[in-house]
Length: 194
Ligand SMILES: O=C(O)CCC(=O)C(=O)O
Ligand SMILES: [Fe+2]
Image 1: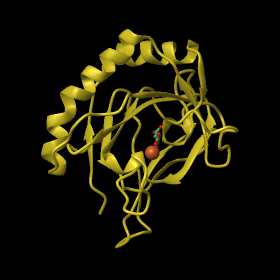
Image 2: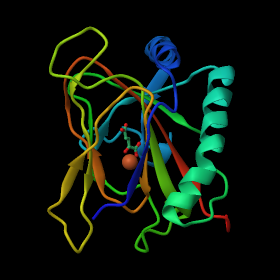
Image 3: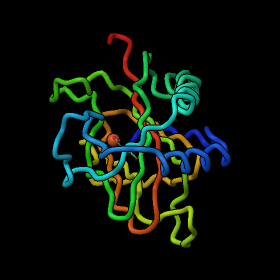
């Protein structure tokens, strides 16, 4: 079993469309690992996507939304959460991907990521095999089963505006985008001790 929560329509369609347009037009750079900018060259075999620099107003709006969701996530996962990290605004183009990984909260890696308890992803546009200019194919967010059921794979349905939350130690990946552009927002809620 994989423990995850779907919050439908955390953002409405108009807000999603505006965010996609802003991300597409914003300056950006390769998204590093752990959001670090000191990894040069980028890690093209592990992850390929662009992290956009959106306006302060947009970032504040999304941070407000993440703050609003905190209580529901605490209830669902049975954890007490502290602050969340600065949201990242991601743009994947054809061929972009993120290999299977964990975002944090694993005992093996003693870095900043150990403070992450819950990962949140907000989808901003739709995945569909029916080609339309604002949707994409491929680019599935897939959650992997735990040690007790490692073969399990759960592909999340990308409905614009829905927020997906899962424990940060859950292995997950973004499969390569095969058509179009994919837009998402990610952030991580930390525990209370950091
Ligand atoms: O873009 C996504 O759907 C998820 C990205 C991700 O897994 C990450 O940034 O850690
Ligand atoms: Fe991730």
